[in-house]
Image (cartoon, rainbow, N blue to C red; front, top):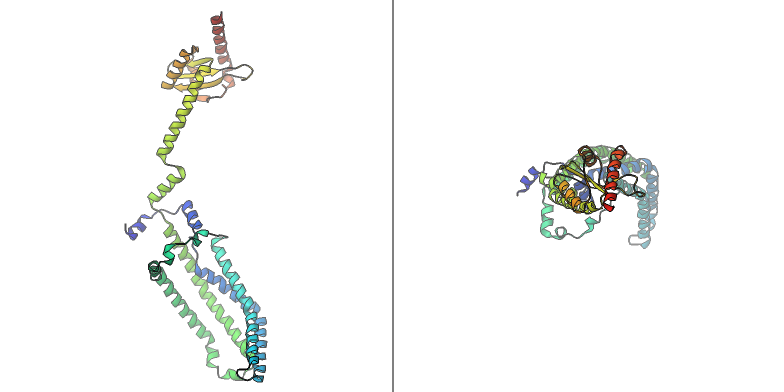
Length: 357
């Protein structure tokens, strides 16, 4: 079946079971643009709140380098050590910004997936190391779309960056006469402006990409009607098997019921449609208990067993009908029938005493 035909048949919304299985396999609608949005948010917050201290620290480090670098000659180890120290100070100054960006990226992932871990992604798969499969992924439609989207995004960000930084670039020759703190502060100011413009762009991309990612994930998770039926069978059980099991359970229950008929004291009949076998044990039960009941053919079998074991058959159609419909096996009869059944039990005991005499 062609892939297009298969997609056309997937018209049913994914079930919760299918979504849970996909989650266990690590298949989740994760938008990378949303993660980027959180990272840019972290960068923007860092620059706004840490720009002053970071700029001051970097300025101090760079000033020290330019002031003391003249004391060394080219190739001097002291110059190399000074450069390493300056770079280390600058790195420590911006380390907090990168740490906040990494934390923001984790928040971006958790906001889309929740706290989630799947070891299924760690399982070795042949298609991950197969050159053919890798080539197909590299030149797939999704990869080409990602490449095109990345190129467009870089072009737009580059254009915005040029517009924001153009005043500095055009006046670069004048910056030679400025002192270092002023140049660093000027660059920081334009950097914040650039980040604000980029953040607006990233926000738009994140909103569009999030909607598209979730729509695409839902489309990929859609099921055919046959898949929905198969899943229902797996969760609920095959109807044919369930029917067969139910029939076997009923047959076993019927056999156990018939085995109890010889223990009955009396069988109330309709006289042909219903039969209810009762047992009364003084001191054990407060009322007679239904040992067996049945209609039509089962009623006939109950009557035959009763006759075989010389159990009295009492014809009382109204009582037989109401006991059959309202009392389950091994249950005592309701209180409203005590008097009628008591008269029947007493009659049966009188018959037994006459036989003994």
